[in-house]
Length: 428
Image 1 (cartoon, rainbow, N blue to C red):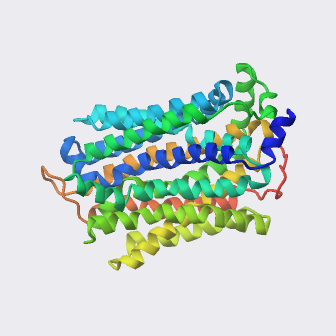
Image 2: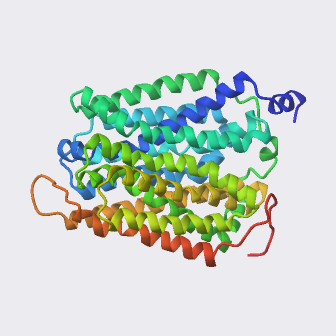
Image 3: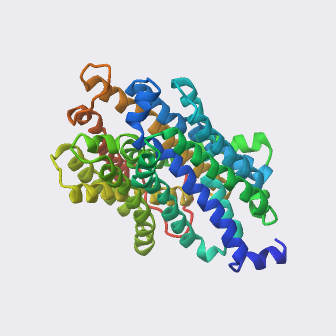
């Protein structure tokens, strides 16, 4: 590495902070787009003339392309640079949400969400690479925690603030989505103007670059059973957050007699719990020098919180707020699972392994959310206009404590403890 690069990486500058903020803001932006549908359920069902099951498929369309792109994204960013990849990714997100605002049926809405998922798939990887390449190593954990906090602001903005904005424009959700698209266009120009590719992680460029070599390493990774246990844990500990936080949370709370604005605010507590849980649980696992106890705790805590949300007739808003916050906190176990994944492989496979873990989460969401939508629609009373009742959600949301139980079993019997701070090389 050149001396100039080393000097920049060993100190924090205003320029490096600005570049990091642009990447972190895109992380916030894609999180906002990911969760925006949760407060538009009634409007979309009426405007697009679609069924509850179709709306579920529109929601998970995001996860389909997001999951598929996770492994290729690392290769594309490494080959063409962060500046080009990030600029195009922001543009695709902005174009996708603006296209969604013109949808009048299922197919265009579904295609638009596919585009949003494709663009969003670059956010995490680009943020990670910019953190690694622009900021000192001793501050990586701190800035990653800040990124999680900033990212959680996306769902928070998609909650009560967006509902209030929706009321200001006379419930015209198309205007809100157009405004979101314009924000993306501005961000794209900022990224294209200021993000540079001068700083590189040369060690990553020294690893194999040929397609046969890459495929050999990826196939070798896929044959490791421990990797799949971590993927399964990450998926089952997180998917409940998507089920309530990105689609059904607000509607479910409305069936309990809670006003839309308050229901949206309570639902957004899921993401605040996730934002607080990620740095706290990461710090605790560092302090204990062990990951597995934290993974087990998150699974047990998730079982209790999700069972209370589904099974107890709670109407007190403060209690529900704490429960939804707790659900997000339990889901933060996926961040410790990502650390466990990174410690389970060598340097040359970290990006691929993390992408595989993220892809597993996305595909779990793409499976569970439509299943829940099918169960909700099956439970609903027949009628031309969808009218939800609390009983319609009981069967579908029972999936949540079941998934947390699976994550508990996996953390007990599938995931082995790693040596803190070092890669534990064992045969699989």
